[in-house]
Image (tube, rainbow, N blue to C red; front, side):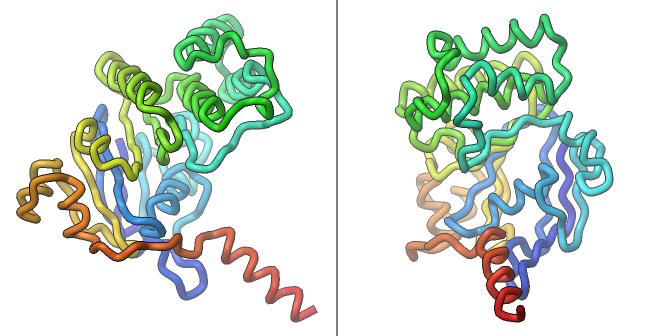
Length: 263
């Protein structure tokens, strides 16, 4: 379902992703883990057509994100790490707009919106502006929106960040049920190691833009001779506290400053 070969992304002289290769099978739940600034979000942006690779190849549901972006976008739903809702629209309007963009038929669209807003317990707030929502409510709405068009693949970039344990458990119960009943492929990042240990069938760990290990949780523990996935993660990536590495927005700001100086 996802094939990545020798994928590289450079910003100036900085390698955000450096010669990465991995695959995700159809119907698999796959965790993509790494410290801050390791290259996780940059990789997801390339997989989901938001960034073009510097080099290497990607196939998403047998399509190329660079040359066939529309086909790829129809294949997946995504919940971003950063907020992406329109605060000036209501919850219903955010869902409706997404459904129209993805050509969800009118009757089915209304049914799906109601079903998903009830699932994330926002049905009674469907007519409220999103700017009135708390951070957790916005996160739940983003999850509902990403599932609206029945995608074959769901990308989740730290989907449970800021959610309470009850909401996290509710969300994963639904996603696992979706995975089992419909064979939906799930690709997610998280900093909650117990979440990855419990949910993921396979795990890839990226650090400094390179894949440092791939396997099941049990295989990673065996490889590092550790008792927990968190300990395995620390053994593979080190215990030094990381700050966020420079990302695309930082390099864009840098480029603008340099351009302004030349003027």
